[in-house]
Image 1 (cartoon, rainbow, N blue to C red):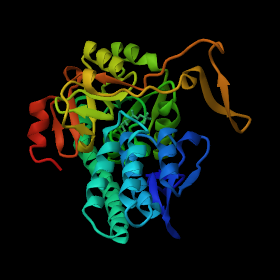
Image 2 (cartoon, rainbow, N blue to C red):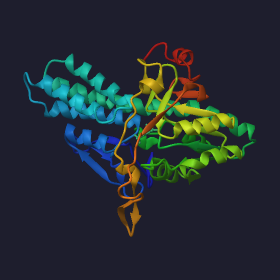
Image 3 (tube, helix red, strand yellow):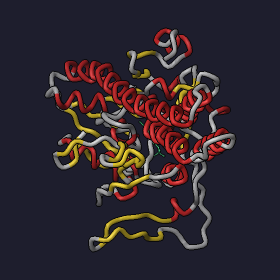
Image 4 (cartoon, rainbow, N blue to C red):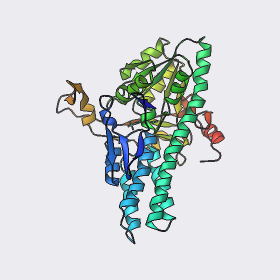
Length: 368
Ligand code: MRU
């Protein structure tokens, strides 16, 4: 996608040095576009944990490149395997909810174990990271194609009037490598001339909606309005939302979805108001080993500081300010689980299906 008319992915190899990974430091958005160099697995782990990069597909791609850097820096000889195992553990421990992280690291581990020399392991780890990246782009593009049909149908029913779409957090191209998951159908619809308008939940505490989704939509020229997180229910009661589309960090094989905290409350409001509630995901986000999202998906808990304070631009400087009494405790569950029965459908790279074991199995009887 584009920033100020220039095409970007969210992660790439440095042009003149393939031993350096470059990312957009998302902590600085929307106020600054800062490109960061990652040169070691420790730097990659920090970038994921501290959310320089974020969003399930992007975390997966970044971890895949992290394993390539681990191969580069691992000592040759009998210590190589231990080094790689430690790197894998370090990366997997950064953020527990998004399954794409373990999915990418495990693929790298399997590949690395089955190749003999350090040179060959390193080369193949880079090839696999590039494949995971390219694959993510293609999956998101296909999610866009399938989700577009849903928006088109609503636009037709509304005789070409504006389709109002509510989204939560940032499941856009900056959370992936390109296109986004929840936003991919929106970009395609807009590019096709369908009138869309997006209600953007601000998404406290880290404000991924207000900062990142709004930035993306603005750059692409898509009409949107940032709203406080609690407004969605009111908008739905007054027919101001035609559909919701959100992303997910982990989906059970039965269709329960973990996404940014607050998603569940939007799904409840959507159900109460007969507003279709879709979840867009690449199949790399499905955890085939679990059935009960509420009981089995690990929910990341982050620091209270993220709740108690907020970052913003003041006199051209990014400043942090305290919101709460200094000594009030705060709690910060980063995700919640929306049970499958509240989800109208899952928009995947293979098509749209019911959020149910049967629906998912129909599309993914052959896993990729
Ligand atoms: O904590 P974050 O910003 O990584 O959370 C991101 C989300 O919840 C996204 O909705 C999810 O990863 C889907 S990304 C396409």
